[in-house]
Length: 112
Length: 115
Image (tube, rainbow over the protein chains, first blue to last red):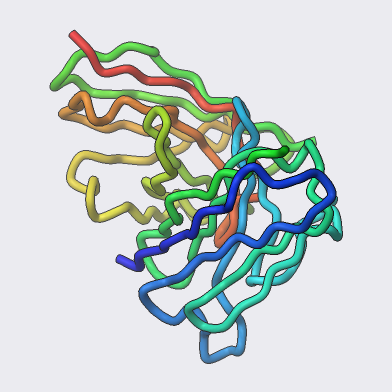
């Protein structure tokens, strides 16, 4: 299985500051078609996960442009510019190159 | 408006079989795949399996021997059955639509395995 490893945030993050969440995969997620098979989700407290980013850097419908995704084949970053109260929760990366689909362990964002 | 809603027993005894239903509205099961994903209390997400728009299935190899996913397209329902439940199967169970990313999720249903 592809192992997804996420880094921690130096919580709490001051409101208005930027935050970067890292994710590393045990196998390159860069396909020969040039696309990277990596998604990001946010799970707010008490809610279901919400899709933020797919294909490593494409924002899902309705997602704020404060969220941006970047990376290489195995190292990825989700950047949140100007963190707001509604950004609080746990962020997950997920790969869809191989079966089983696998998620990172989650990165918690707390607001100061 | 797309909606997915999970339903199930809430409490299951060890060694018994879990049966869950995901009722879908706003999208067609013959054009969309439905996944089952679970989350133990306070822990991360585990993809369990998928039923594709053509009715085919794929399962997580870690639980494949215990898991079955099926559907009734006339009722827009997807079913999960997992046998030989143990306490470590206690989790919130979500259904979610999507082939590669999970764009729509249900609210989840909590399943507790306990005698």
